[in-house]
Structure formats: C-alpha cells, structure tokens
Image (cartoon, rainbow, N blue to C red; front, side):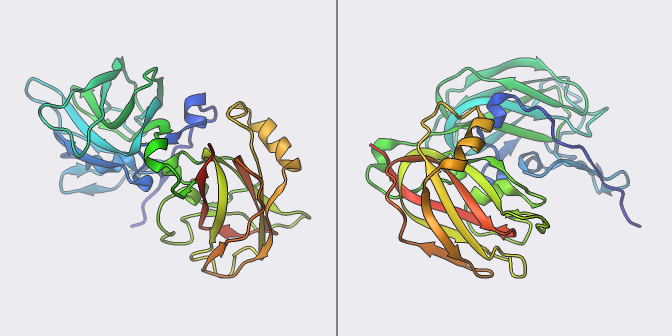
Length: 341
C-alpha cells in the first residue's frame, strides 16, 4: 500500500541568525548525535537531518508510530530526557531552531540547551554553559531562539522536559577559523565547515543547493545545485559568501552524477565586500553585476571534477558568483586559497 507523504514547508521568514549563518548541527556537514538518555520511539540522529521533516500517516515499526525526528518514550519516573550532539565544527552559536513539526500530542512542553568546548568527547568532568534557558515549546512548529554567547563551542546538550519528540534541531552559528593554526595553509574558503554559505541564486528547482558547499563528493543527482531547463535567454548563477576573506589560488567544479544535465560552461566573478553587506542580500545581488572576473568562461564535462589552476589575481575576496551556461547541475564548488592578511 502506498504511503501518503505530508511535508511541512520551511518558514517563509527566517530570522537573521538563521539566514546568515551555517547550521552547525547539520548531519550533512558531519554533526552527530553521540548520546540520548532515551530514543525508544525515534532514533536521536534523525533530528539532525537536513531535509524537511516528513510524516507518513500509516507507517509504524516495532516500537510504534514512526516519526521523523528524535522521540523518547513516555516518562514514568522522575527526571527528563536529553541528548548530546557533536557539532560539525566548532563555532560561535548565534541561535537555534527547535522544530516540532508533526509532533502534535507528543512534543516536549519545554526545553533548554547547554554547550561546551572540549577536545574529544565530553565526560563527567565537562563544564557545560547554559545558552538557552528553560523555554516553552508548542506543537508542530518552528521555535527560533537567538543566542548571545560569543564563546566557541564544540558540543550542545539538548534537554527536553519531561519527554517527547523534536523533529529537527538546528544550531545556527559561525564556524571558528583558527587563523594562527591555519597560518599560510591553503583551505577551501567556500566550505560550509569554514563558514561558506549560499547568499542567493537565480534558480534551484532541483537538488539541494546548500549541498554545493558540503564535504565529500555528491552521492547522487539530488546532492547538489541543479536548475530547471532554461527556456528564456540568459544563464543561471549562484552567489556564495566565503567563510573567510581570502586570496584564491585554484578552483574546483564537480559535476558528479550530472551526465545529461551538466552545464556546458561556467565562469566566476568575485569581490571583496568585507562583512558589511552580509545581511543585505539585494545589495549583494545587484553589486555582483559589476564584479571582476576571477575565472574566465570554461568548458565543463559530465560527471567529473574540473580543476582550474589559473585564476585572475584579484587580491582578497569575500564573495563569488558562479555562472553556469545556460543551466544544469553542479555537485560541489571548492574555492581553494589562503587567508588574507
């Protein structure tokens, strides 16, 4: 029997901390749930998934109703449930989304969050800092909460009171770049693990555009940025804010799994906008019309990593716009370079 799938759309108006930060609790970037006091009904790792929570009315497993998230059993003794998450990378946390989508009669009435900064994994002697006090939650909705801490953290501990289910935990923040440790090393300035993020795009009809900056190669044709077939003049593009101001040395464009739908050609323009325009998406998109060329138009091929060692010496840059001609799919973008002095 086929299952009916109901998908709740993401909120139309994200707060600034979510719109202009990286989800440090993204499983796709490498975050992992390393402990749960109880996950009888739904395995704790599900709440770190990048995709929108799904609901299948008729799906059950050996433990009961299948839910897309973390769900503990009904508490029959004193105490409450909690889970520990290792973030994809250390960073300064700007805010949270505690998403209870599809949890209607089984959501936690309240939650709070602590964080720590440790090498390895937290233990009995770990010092935890409260960064979200005990806060009420409601059924089947996004709960956005800002964080004012400027400390760097590696793990978070989510407490739910007393039990219940969380569809998604998103921890928005800025990945920490240790400039002294990196020194003169070449890094991927666009990587999500280094703070790279997508600012705007002309079209993202297929795939998952945020995966463009994820580690590793794409696993299938849905694991990357793909536009619809273009039926009007022009070309498609996507703008990326680099994780750090840097000097670009080489570029990689990966068309993994895109065989009959890879772009024919690509080029890149770039600019040094500092940090002032991070929250002004319209201004960035408009200014990109006049950015100088970093990579001239290059021919692409199917299902391959394209490495370009020759780039224009523009000096430090903070943003790039990848142009594809006329449309198609790109799995990953790597902007290799050094941190600007």
